[in-house]
Image 1: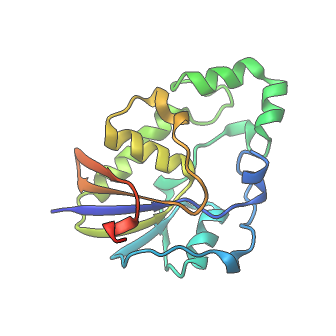
Image 2: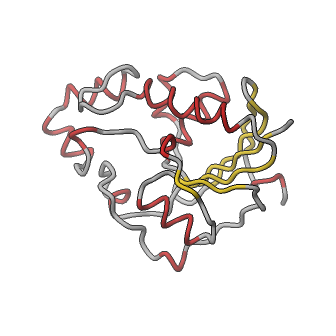
Amino acid sequence: MTCRVVLVAPAITPSLRRARFDDGDSIENPGAVALALPAAGRAVSSPSVRCRETAAALGLDASVEPALAGLDAGRWRGRTLEEVGAAEPQALVRWLSEPGAAPHGGESVREFCARVTAWLETAGGTAGRTVAVVEPEVVRAVVLHALGAPETAFWRVDVPPLTATEVTGGPGRWNVRLGQVGGRP
């Protein structure tokens, strides 16, 4: 049984433009959101406003999946990376370099990756295609898991807005498909 999961990063928001930890803002220009997606048996979304709005703008009737929530940045939520770096430079460096660190009082990268991996392995038991509109860090966690890459590589995966990444396979064996989703030109 092969499972396909298409991970779609949300549309741009003012927070993303300012490198601000998600503060619940809406996507910019929802009418301009467009992405060719293959037909799917089910659609899910991270609980954030930007993911739900992106899913709706893409015409998906997505159910909210709490396990796909973004990385909990604790007290840094709503602040820019620059602000955090100025106020807590050592804490920021530690968080970006040590997957088990959570100096912000939220979730560590390690904890986050474990949560996302658990969801993927469960979803992998379902045949067919799932389209998931998820936070960029969810895409990072899935790619690391699929490739067997270390958590220290988490911040080295760039996920631009409105890009799709597909993983295929099933529990314990995933492949990352680059290029056009579904392999069509």
